[in-house]
Amino acid sequence: MSVQRVLVTGAAGLIGRATLDLLDVRGVTANALVLEDPGDLPAELVIEGDAADPAVVRAALAGADAVIHLAAIATPERDPAEKVFACNTQSTFTVLEQAGRAGVTRACVASSQAASGLVFAARDLHPAYVPVDHDLPSQIEDPYALSKQVDELTAAMMARRHGMSVVALRLPYVGGFGDRLPDFARRSAADPAVHARGLWSYLETRDAARACLLALEVTEPGLHPVLVAAPLTLVPQPTEELMRRYHPTTEVRSPLPGRTVPFDLSRAVDLLGFVAEYRYPV
Ligand SMILES: NC(=O)c1ccc[n+]([C@@H]2O[C@H](COP(=O)([O-])OP(=O)(O)OC[C@H]3O[C@@H](n4cnc5c(N)ncnc54)[C@H](O)[C@@H]3O)[C@@H](O)[C@H]2O)c1
Image (spheres, rainbow, N blue to C red):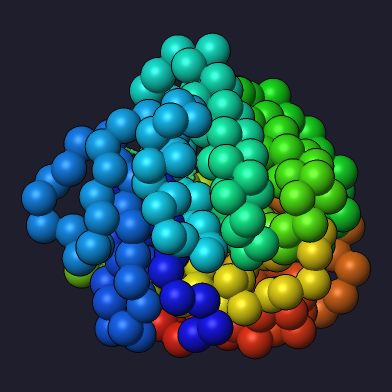
């Protein structure tokens, strides 16, 4: 890798741990920012504290030349709406502002496919069209989706303000073969309505970590939103059949043969050279 030392925020979380593991394998030094140190993170420096606190972030950035910002409340379903929105947006602002001031020019932030508004809305929504691309009109009704949309606006501003490259990975449902993915796959296959809002997409945790590292290789200043997902869905039913049944008003703009995931993944390939390696055996 072309970076020497990476700050990973939210490093004790699902994707954070996998990211630290991969940095370790690649021989890249890591700093970790966590709310609470679990004591077993493969990082040279572990800083405990809130990612929305500039002093904490400054300490965590020591010597770093790149940032992978994953710290967030990853769902609107457990915490008060105000807390989800404030935590996520303030953390992203603070991490990128402090990184920019410290001279960091490469950053990756975790955005979400939920930023379209579909996943956590109180009612069923349908995308205007598929394959979903980076221009899909937003239908946001929940604080988590809004926080991710604001995070992308913040990232665009910080990219201009500090001359940084910021890749915002629009992640789908992320899970490991060894943890939550198999159960979710089983439930989604038995009843495709379970994952209809996520358009049956997923990404294995180790692939998510690899996408984060590839994002740090992008040098062109600016915000780069990138949709990432495994190329096939998590369910056995053909995608076009599922679209007709669960999203009947959605325009299907190009053929989606077999289990093709209804997302345009071309930017992930073109910009990051990323294609998911871990395919869940459906
Ligand atoms: N897992 C998914 O399916 C998924 C999908 C789309 C996007 N994302 C995004 O990816 C990122 C990582 O997700 P994850 O699945 O690893 O979530 P996670 O909940 O496992 O990890 C997030 C970590 O961030 C920490 N954190 C929260 N607020 C913080 C704060 N203010 N300061 C410092 N640390 C804080 C939490 O303690 C947690 O350890 C998040 O930004 C999430 O929104 C995840």
